[in-house]
Image 1 (cartoon, helix red, strand yellow):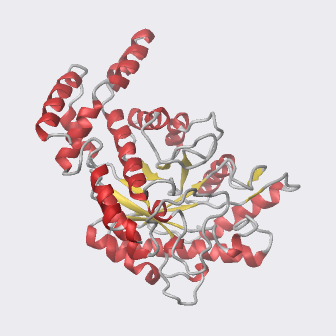
Image 2: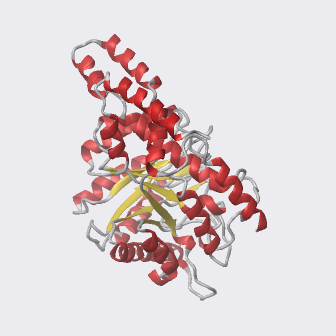
Length: 427
């Protein structure tokens, strides 16, 4: 266990080192408190959801593993989220999917969901003073069995999903009104085909028209900020994804021409080619869009949604946000699910890794690096970039945890193990 005095001593030395590079670590620690992470609820139950039909995941989504202690209902899931959040410094939000409605055997389907079906989530968030984000769930349902929803040629099926997305936006607006905090409402659909389609234009036209109807009602930006999420492919969707990156880039321009200036793009770190990272896309998108949503994930060979660690891909993303001075314009939400390890540990590892990457980016001596570049001193630029990677940000992180009253280093593992013994093992 790390001792507070040891943490303080290491921090004092680190602060002195950073000061030599012109970085005020105290100012950075204050900035960290203002950058929230929206933690994904679906890690806690392997994307199963709380609906009685038990649709589970589909549409290219798959959680693997069967570690003991999976949450079986809303009360258990919220208790597990509480335990995870106790071990996280800074601000958190909770990212909620519509499939986590609590209907209590009421005969109502997703196209008719209302705010009351999320009452327990709203009351839970209100009691803790945290914000909720929301997502329509266009997968894990009999009406999504053939991997077409908003782009389905069958008008009856398409209507079901249009109505579901409309209902989700109404619910998001109600949640924002009750909690007094803006809700990010993200729409991702799994629509696509395993093999080559004969008419790509048809499906993309249907998706465009469905989205137009969904977004026809404009909610105040202080209530709802909508996002659309692109993807390269999924399991069973290897040849064609309707909502590609190019489609949604075009749709943003289309929506803006129609007067919808608040719609934003979602970049998921696992939704692109295996050798393609999203870091380079951030500055381009922010030049032409006021906001951006990033789903923090870790792809291993494909969009496998591994638990996030503070690897180079994640560090690159956070550095680009910092260099664009855009942490107030970029929403950050985790999106991973792993049933092979303790699910609370997965949450904590992933969110803390995201926060550590943010901290490391904020501690980068960006102005000195930029100055070297502007003066044509490219060797100095490279040297400073490399040095920044090995500066003692871990000592600053541990001080941040100490300040926030949460375990530093890996000391969070002990309370998770105790919770597994006391609670999870008895499920």
